[in-house]
Length: 365
Image (tube, rainbow, N blue to C red; front, side, top):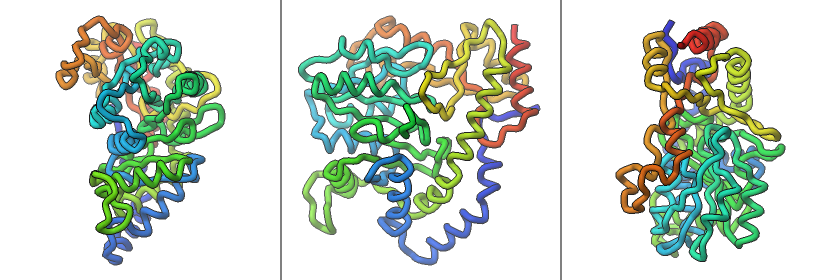
C-alpha cells in the first residue's frame, strides 16, 4: 500500500464543480483584486474566528509582519517567539528590524512554555508571538496574563490552527490579533499562497490593510511606506467554498488522530499529547522517535509518506547565525528537531490506510 504524507484528492474532488463554477464566475466578472469575493471572505472568516475584522493578505508571513509593523515594532525592539516553530514566525519579527527572542516549548505539547517567558523579557520586549503549532492552541491564559503584567501585545501565529479552540474560543480571537496562512496544505488552504489577519481592533485592521496596499488608505493616497500583500479574488472565492466545509474536514482529522492514539502502542514511539480544554485540529500529527532515521526509512519502504517538522531549529539555521546562538543553548527545540516525524494526516484517509499505518508503527523494532 502507498499512502502519501498529504493528499488533496478527496477534498478537491468533492468540491470540484463548485470551485470551477466560482472560478468561471470570477473570470467573467474581470475583477481580480480587492473585489466582492475578498470582501465576502473577510466578513465570513472574521465571523468564523469570532472577531470583528479580517484583512486578506498575500500569505501568512505577511499577515504576521504587517501586524507587527502596524503596532510599531521596529529596530531595537525584541519579540518573544517559540524556539520550536517554522521560520516564518521569526522572519516576521526580523522584517520589522526587531530581534526574535526564543523561548523553549513544553516538550510534550510542542508549544511555547509560558513558565519560561518572563525570564526572557527585557526593557526592549514589546510583544509575544504565540504559535498554535500543529493545530493545538498555546496556553493563552498564561501568555495573556504575562503580557498584561509587562504591557506587551500578543499576536497569535495561527497558521496551522484554523478552527482550533482554546476554552471554547476560536484561535484568532485569543490575543490582540492573529495571522493565518492559507497555503494549500493547511486545514483551510487556497490554491496558492494566501493569508489573513484577524482582530477586534478596527484601527489596527485599517492600518494592516493600508500597509498591505502600498501604504494607501485610498487610491493614490499613501499614508505609510507600505508593502504589496493582498488576497486576490480567485483565492478568496475558493476559500469561501472551503470555509463552509472546514469544520467537517477538521472533525475527520480529529477522528483519524483518535484512531492513532487508540491504536499505536510501541514503546519506541512517543505520541503527541493534547491539552485539556482545547480543540486540537491536527494540521500535523507529529510523533517522536530516538531512532527517527531508521523509522523514516522503514516507513518509506512500507509506502508510507512522512515529513519532519522541523529538522533544523531556527537558531541553528544559517539565516540566523548573527544571533550567535550555539548548539545546546535551546536543547528542547533541538531535541524535538532531531526526533520529530510527522505521519500522514489529511481529510479522507480510509480506515484501511490508518490501520495500515498503525500496524506498521507497532511492528517497528
